Image 1 (cartoon, rainbow, N blue to C red):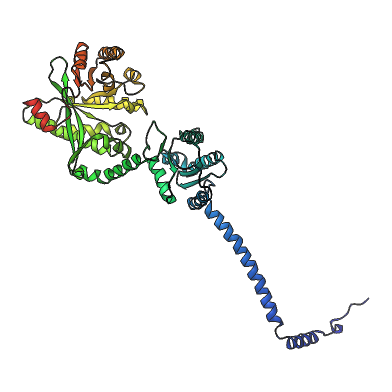
Image 2: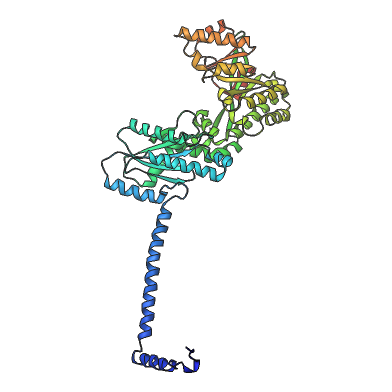
Length: 479
């Protein structure tokens, strides 16, 4: 068979063109209809794809990308619905966060911190009952909505949550603080959250408490603390913080032998009333303003000693408080040495009071710093001895010069012979360790006579004198 040549192929294209042209003439809207159908099809595809995309985006924005929990906005929306539908039941809002979580990120990096947050979220969510919800508000802050029957049961739930948090890291010790608001009022959800957060803030930094219920007392306290924080820097600049001196009397001579410097705040916003340290010291420890305040008081005491020396008055040793924070922040040795040098004060006139809690975190570092202070000529006193749990062991380890027995010991001796035995043996032990012994909180003659029979060197308390403004102390001591 021979192939067909191109010349033999029928020329049908002109006919097709003619037929197509004739068809389009007869049906002028055909192409337009095709275009419209294609446009409608394309639009429907885009529309349904957009709906799926929008649903995905909506779901994605409702879910926290790190923990998988619902985010704060969705939490509030769901909570509003639940409170409307389930009236008559007891509910609580629980805020919690991880103490010093920034350190976790610093040590393990952001990815490591996120892994811990995911583990916390997973374990907490597993403890929730049907109808209860959890959200990561931001950073390491979580919020839970739970049902409860009694306060005791609510505390048990919080204890379970706390254990779950602690178990989320083997290599890093995790501590959480929980604030609880029992939903009893028809108020905005943001206000409920704020109240749970206020309860949490009231215990932040505590080594004893890990949860707190919101109440009016907490609210008033935190409002007061906020006011203090807003004015503390200006108050320091204005010299509103002033040292008071409480005399320490010799049990042998009955005369003033030394004194302790205590801070008071002459706050003009409080009708010029003197604010006691109980209102602000704990706050200053937590926000670290105590570093500035301590340094300021040290300098004020050095100014006072310089004044006495220049006036040719016999100076006495004055003890000043040193917050535990100084041992982990800044350069305590150089800072206090510079102040003493600036006023040309013999270091033995300054006694540095530290508390037992100072040694809990890093004994070796504390001992090293104390040794350096000793080399410069400073004396070290352990304050509030007996107020903690490991004081006897601390005495065995720490190179302190002065032991101050806590007031709780002596204030029970008038009726408790066992207390007298304990005090006698503490004093005896301290003397054998070549320590000077001061007993705080002496309030009556009976306590004074008892201590005079022991080897206690000095007493401090309201029986002799309350803390005095400097000019009153000078009048009492030098007159």
